[in-house]
Length: 111
Image 1 (cartoon, rainbow, N blue to C red):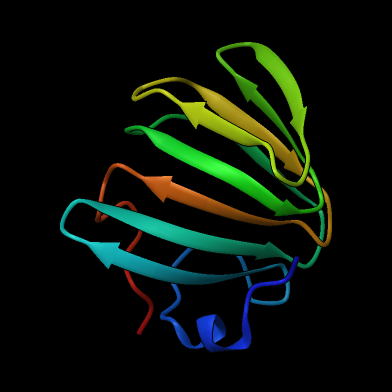
Image 2: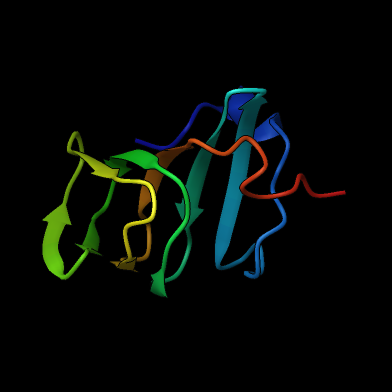
């Protein structure tokens, strides 16, 4: 399920990927950050940690390893990453996810 056209007008975040690899659209509040990630190519995210994160797969699939436990998530499935948990991911091309971060400033807005 691609995101609605009007949502593509939401701001983007500054991440270390080119737009032809991953594009983003965000909604930020003082309490958190909601990011629609659209992966145009396959991406391997190395192990890292931060405050809590919740996500749901809208299209495609993501193989997520949280604290050594690996599971594949598909459309309609959700995941929850506790604050401070080490995690990594393998994301297939064409995947769209909505991730909500506990930290409103997890990523700076682009521009």
